[in-house]
Image 1 (cartoon, rainbow, N blue to C red):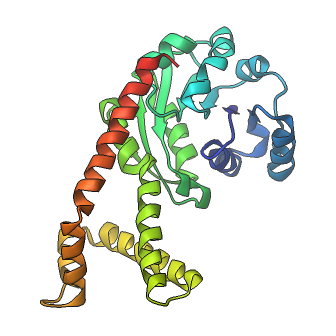
Image 2: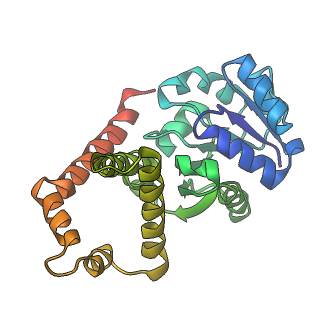
Length: 266
């Protein structure tokens, strides 16, 4: 099965690498907007880049659409010209629905996916939804692609914009918390490089505790909080200054943006 990539940026690049590992370089090709970028990636990954998008799409079974939504209108015409009912569009564009992709590309087999940047380290989390025309055999190919860069969850499309908040955009929220926590440690004398190591490993370990124990995060938090201790004092300060509400509001803003993106007819 031939897989092509349109775009190889923050999300397209790790998926391109994953596809090479999962399917072999001979079955993968790509195109970006800059020739020097294409040449560098081709040299690094051993994958040919395509000089003409139309021909690339015509020769592909799966087309991974990994451009920013605001640039999608530039690639839709070639996609529509080369489309057939057997080709599969895999979109990682935020806020662009299956119906929109069907209308703009002429495809009937659509996969909408939301990966995240930890895919660069094969630790990504990708949410996936499918149009009705995608077969179980084809779903297995899609799963293989995204499992090459981390873990997957299959969800109804109606939850995809919420998933953008929970896994697509949320690494930025986590990094902001980590940066602030490290700044606090530096404030009290810990060298910055050490502060980042302490915070990074702590967040990594805390995430593993959540995933591997299956305990409620509130219970895990309570287990750290000794009566009258340092941790509960810090937790009380976070509550007083609105951490929980700030996070909820960030999710509201993220969701609203995702909902509105498709209405702009990118």
